[in-house]
Structures are given as structure tokens and as C-alpha cells.
Length: 422
Image (cartoon, rainbow, N blue to C red; front, side, top):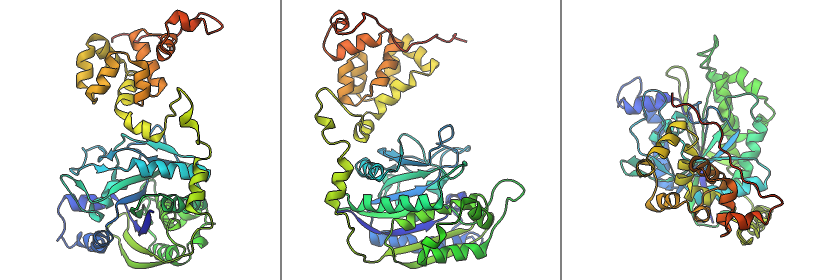
């Protein structure tokens, strides 16, 4: 069974990454940053978690035109994002799609509506503190990674109480995972700061100290604070401390804070807390009963003949080919595909098997592999194959045979008006 080994609360200001990448380890202005993280690094080395469940917010980098309240990373790996000046020189970190799928099913069973992402890069909200928390080298990191991106920058956003409830459900999701792994919960963001408007530069150290103390000892007393009050006390961007509250809710009701540090070099405090789990009674709902509730809506779906639900597992396996087929909505890629399909396929991030499936227009083979039907439509539109032709091929029938099973002998597709070359 999965075991939660404890939690870390940490700021995620880009200041941390700058200091590390600029080798400011012994500079007296920057040295307190590294001193504050040394106990956290040591804790990670001692606990040796297999997976970090990492709560952060994206800063309009990977998520811009789509900004979810709660987005769960389900991918195989996550690399550093380019935030304007190029990505950091750090390796990608491996994900844990199997644990992510379990968490997704558990959260949906508890009536949380999630979005799922993969193939996105992570900005300083994730990698800035991670690079001074977890050991890594050119070949990778010391643990796997399941990110939870929280939408805390746009209004309306979920309440502090909703973040707390999410954390409670997240705890049960992890605890009910049937594999014997160790999991650490990381909550990032804060503390008091504001980076926009005439109020930029706002800090409130007194509130920061109070918040950290209450987070450890009496966190539920913070749940009735509206976001506007958190912003009043801690600055608008400082209201992202709701992610610390999610982390705290995912831990035992009582914790022991074994490390706490606070340093305010400029715009944003750089603070860390280590919270150790304390024993507590077994959950009222057994893991077996909870897993049965998780599967209730889906039980039997996989046994439906000729039916292939687009599970997280299938979406991860088929991500490369789905991503390529989706890219055909770009007129430049579509034109390149039409002009020289073999060259376009050779340059794409695809396996030989995936290229062959596309090359042979193996519609049912792509479905079996993990392609979702709506990507087949896009390939059909580019190659002049209508939906009816795809339907017939998937059933092993001719178009004429398939049309006889319909009320009318029609054909159609999703292709529209092609843009001019210029």
C-alpha cells in the first residue's frame, strides 16, 4: 500500500532558481536561500520517496488559453519550460501515469472535476524549488513526479475550503493505491507578495509567521478566509497559499513541524516547512471499499465488444501519435504532410509502428493502439477520406455495405475551407 511520508511547504519564486543557476551558494546575499533548503534536501534523502505529488501553479506559461482550476499531470515526463529567455539547463523528470490514473479515478469518485495534461513543460512554479529540494543529475531525478496544477491566477478561483477538501480526498486517493510506494506531498507558492499594480512589493511578515504557525497547528481555522482576505493580508499573488493548505490537508490531522525557515531577500519571502506525519486511526471506508467505489462507474466498460474507452493509460500510450494527428489542424503542417508525407512522418516524434499505422491508414489499428477517434477525423480530412469510409473500415465493411445499415446513403467529413498558401 502507498505510504505518505510527510509534506513540504515551499515558496516557488524564480529567485531560487536564479540563485542556484548563477552559483550564488557562498554569496552572503543569497546564501540563506540554500541554508534554508539544506534540511529539506536531507529529509528527502532520508525518506527516499518514490513519488512526489507536487502542488503548484503555472504562471501563464504552459497554461494560457486554457486555465483549469485543478489539472492533473498524467504524462510520462515533464521538462523545464521556456519562460521567455530559454529553458533552464536541467533534465526532465519522470512522471508516474499509473499513480496519476489512480488519483484521477479517486478524485472523480469524490466528485472533483479534473482536467488532465501531458506534453506540457513546467515553469518556475514547479522547477524553481524542486531543483534545490530533490537530487538530480544529467540522467534524471531521485523520484518520480505527479504534478497538480492549480488555477490561482484567474477569478473566480476555488475557495480555501475547496482546496482543503481536495487535499483530504487526495490523501485517501494516495493511501488507497495498492502498490507499496512512498509518497511525499509538496505544496508550493507564497508567502506574502504582490507583483502587479501600485501595490507591487507588498509583504506582510507578521501574517506569514501567523499563517505558518496556524497551518501546522490549527489549519481548519483558515478555511473561512475568503480569497479577498488572503489577498488583503498577503498580497494578491500571496493568496496562492491555498496550495499550502491543500498539501496540509493531505497529511495526518496532527503533524510535527521539524523545520521552518523564512528569508525575505526582495519581492517574495523564501520559506520552507517540513511536516512529519503522526499516527491516526484507519479511515472509516476501507481501501477495498474505496477502490470499488472508484471503479463503480467504469466497471464492465472495457468488456463492451468493440469498445475502447479513452483511459488515461491509453492516452499516455498514444500521446505521440495523437499529438501528431492533432497537429494537422495547423495549415503549415497539413501542407507539409500533403506535399511529402514520408518526410513529414520521418521528422515527427513517432515510433516506426506509429508511422506505419498512419501510412497504411489503418483506422481500426490506430483505435486499438490508443488513438482517439476524433484524431482519425483530422487525418481523414487531410487525406480526403470521409467519416463514413472510416466507420466502414473499422467494421471491416465496404462503404456500400456500411451505408446499407444506415437510414441514408450519405458521406461527410470535418474538412472545411483550406486557407490560401500565403
